[in-house]
Length: 402
Image 1: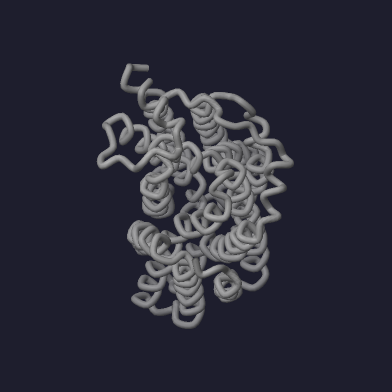
Image 2: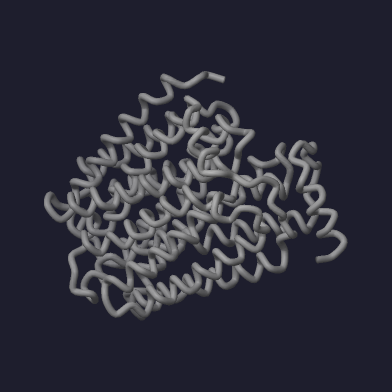
């Protein structure tokens, strides 16, 4: 690394430094490499939302069964997240991030060339390890890159990759699968991860481990009431979201009666709205985390139940899918912020619990959604989304107003 990178690394070790008036080019590039990684990983994670129908047809399985590729990613990720900060011990965090991104490349290639469901699930399981490890370290790494007082700003940029992925993955995935096949769409996500890996190698400074967590440290953190409520909020709201959102394409096909082109446009609207929601969520979380959580749950619940009631109308369906996207764009900022504020002294351990909560929620949501869509039709999963969002609204009432 250059002398600039060396100074950058020394400064990064001090989490109490004041927020600089302007980030150096090295800081910007490092943060952007993290955003590129989140974009690549989440694009691969969300891709099945736009590929379910052709994937199911190609492999000779039901749409509900095809949706379990999401379950494979999330369930493996949940276990990995719980153990990740223990297993990596004192390893340099840059080396860990590079290795995780390399794993994502291989996993996406395996999924793209899978000849049956089991190989596809194996590839998606590898992606789950890469995803959970990255997100478990993300808050702590960003804090070291930019300083504790600028962590929110840094994480807003990193989570912007999530919002951008919701634009690219489902909508472009649907179009690409129609043009050249769902396997080609999967292969492209490996290319995105390769670009992210290159940016990491070039821009991230060496990040020696500043702490080593034991499994006991992670579990002790769950005794804090704020951590418990933060995890519960993630479990409820994200279980509901993934129970419904994975099956939005079947809903738009069977209820709104849209073809592939309009469906791709609706999913594009979801993604664009999520970018706006990402910005709004960051602003609201800084002003009042309670109100931000209430707004996120309310918008997601209202959009889901309204789709159930009036989703047969094309204009209404497009509007409500976009509103759902706005709510989901808020979630990756609001929910982790809500949890991390209860553990500012243990960000890596809190990151593990945050990812476990997300991945367990995704697993449960995909399983329930798959069961419901196969037995009760495309409207069922969205009804569950609305119900769990309503329950989430009760949590801010038990949280501190500070």
